[in-house]
Length: 289
Image (cartoon, rainbow, N blue to C red; front, side, top):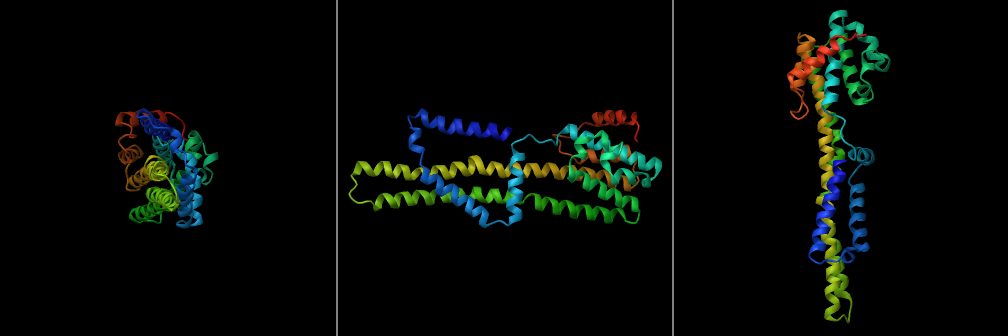
């Protein structure tokens, strides 16, 4: 939603300012320039990406129009879930978690947090490492190294759309110049034009430069930054799980392990110590399954 608001502000300020100085919007409507710039941008995007990268970019674009669901409420839910899981493992033994891990949607613990269960990335990461903890055959340092590699791999893959969109944004001003130069070439190539006819044609050609820069820095580059922020939020969720599980593996009680996870969060989304303590106290009073 914020990106839509930003786009509206860009359009209002740019074209509003143009109208304030007596400009005419009709002069900016140059279909040929738009086709050159947008078409060349799309072509460059397709040529520079694999099929996987193109599909990943198309899939993520609709998500950017919505507000992120990785907020303080979801972080609290995640830490509450981690507390319940680790508390059950501590009281009944880690083997008691096997059924919960194999079918989270049927687990009494996981079912309390449908938003988390509906997130395949979080569920796969959490359940996979809980299985490794249940096996009891891996050193905490080995699990930490494996977690780091998986998070790094996920981040690299998830940022492919951001790099692709950013590359298109970097190229649009150049394509705008291409469109402008072609317009100038066309103007100078027409014979018999009067001096008063050359000015409007040159002005029309310059619209290409304007459109290339506006599309690049006003619309496309913000999308790339939005993708990066989205990936950072997902990575932070994984890091929260990682820190909490490792603290538990190193012998810390579930409340302290969850506090370790809280410290891994961004300050803007991190609940306070008292908020987390109250939330944990609330889930303590509920049956763990």
